[in-house]
Length: 603
Image (cartoon, rainbow, N blue to C red; front, side):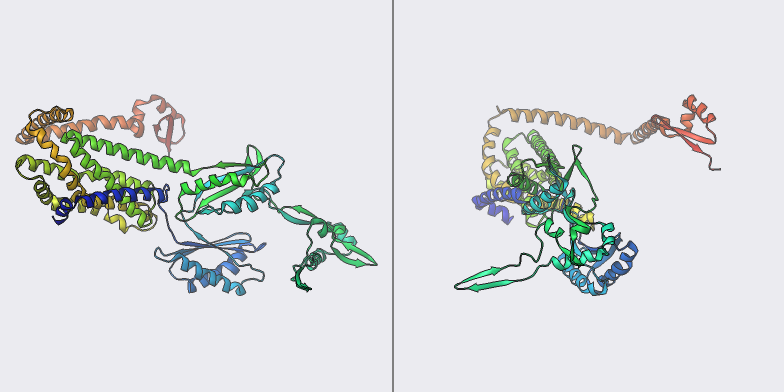
C-alpha cells in the first residue's frame, strides 16, 4: 500500500502527526463543553401574552385564536402549535420543523406579534418571546437568606444586584427569583374618607397620574458654559412626596393623598414562598443556555460569588443548592474510569497472548491516538463531551485493538516464516496482506451504527453522538494502523529477532506467554476432541441436550409458580385457602411477596 510505503519512507512525518494529535486532543478535551447529555436542539418558540384581569375564555378567544391564525399564515416550517390559556396569561408554543432555522422563526414570530396588536383588545402589551431549548435546564440554585433582612430586601438584592452580575458569566440564563416579596409602591385607599369628601378612587388615580410625570427639559447657556436644566417637582422622589400630592381643593381646603389614602413601600400579593431552614428566603435558579458547558457555567458562578458578596450586606447569606456539576463530574469520571479499566484489560490480554511488550506498546499507543482523533472531530462538528460520546468511545476501546493487533500479529508471523527478509519489506508485505480484510472489517463495524443517523426527534440527538464517536474512532484506528503502527513496528520489533535465535528467553513476559500458550493449546486440543466426539455421535448429543433443557424447565416452572400462579399458591398455602373462603366473591388469589391479591367475580 502506498500509505504504508510512505510511512516507512517518512517515519518522522507520522511521528509529528501523532504528537500533533496528542496536543490537539488535549486542547479539545479542555475546550469542548462538558455535560451529562448531548445538546437536544428542538426548535420551539414560546409566546407569552399578559393581560391582567382577563379570564381564560377571553384570553383564548380574543388573543390566542388570533395569534394562531396569524402564525399559520406568516411563519414558515411550523410542525404544530400548542396553546394554554390561564387567568391573565396565555402561552402559545410554536414547534418548528427539525430542519427549520430558529433565528428566522423568532424574527417572523416577533414581527407578526407586533403587527397583530391592533387586532387585540385595547391595552394589550407586546408579548414575551422565548426560544425554548431542552438543554436549557437548571444547573445551580442560590438560596438567599439573612438575619434582619425582610423578604422585600431579599427579593430586591436577588433581582437587581446578584442577578445582574451573574448574567455576565458566559452561557448563563437567570430567570426572576422565586419567593420573597417584590417591592412595589402601594396606595391603600380609605373608602370611608373618600366617601366623606365626595371623592372616588378614580380621582386618586388621576391625581397621581397628572402629578407623577417624566418631562423633558434641556439645557441653558449662561455665559461661556452650558448647564443641564431639570424639573425636580415633575415626579415625586420619595414616598412622603407621593402622600403630599394634592387631589382637589374644596372651599379653600386642599385634600391630599394622605387624607384619603396612604402610600407605602409594599408588595403585591405573594404567589410563592421559599424557606431555608424554616425562614422565608429567596431562590435564584441558574440555567445553562444553549451549548454552554455545565462545568464552565458553575465554576464561573462560584468564582464570581466572592466578588458579589463584597458588594452586599454582610448578613446576606448566599448558599449554593442543587449543584449539577457534582452529577456531571460523577457521570463523566465513571465513564472515564470504566474506559481506562477496559483499556488496561485489553493491553493485558494482548500482552498475555503475544508475550511481547514491544507489540503491546505499539497496539496500546494506537488506542489513545484513535480516541483523541475522535474527540477532535467531535469537537470540530459541535458535539460535547457527555455520557453518550464517552460511552461510544468506551464501546470502541475493545474494537480499536483489532486493526493494530492483526497487523502486528501478521508482521510477527511473516518474520518467523521468512527470517532472512528485511524488516521494512516484512512490514510492507504484512500490511498489504491485511489491507482489504481490515478495511472491510472497519466498514462493517461502522455500518452497524449507520441506522442511528436515520433517527429523528430526541432519539437522534441522544444516539447520533454515540454513533459518531464510534465511527470516527474506528476510521482513525484504521488510518493509524496504516501509518503509525508500521512506523513503530519498524523500530521497536528489531530487538525481538535476537531473542528468537538465542534459545530460551530470560524475559519473564516471554516465559509467561509460552506457559499460557501451552495451556491454551492443550485446552484447544481437548475442545477439538470434544467437538469431534459430538459430531460422530450427533443423535446422542442432541437427545442429551434437549433432555437437559426440558429438565431445567421442569425445575424452573414450579419455582416460578409459587409466586405467580394461583393454582400453585392454592395447593401450597393452606392459610390462603382459609382466607379465600372468608373473602366474599374471591374467585382466585395469588401471593407476591407479603401481599395476597384476590380476584373477585365481576358479577
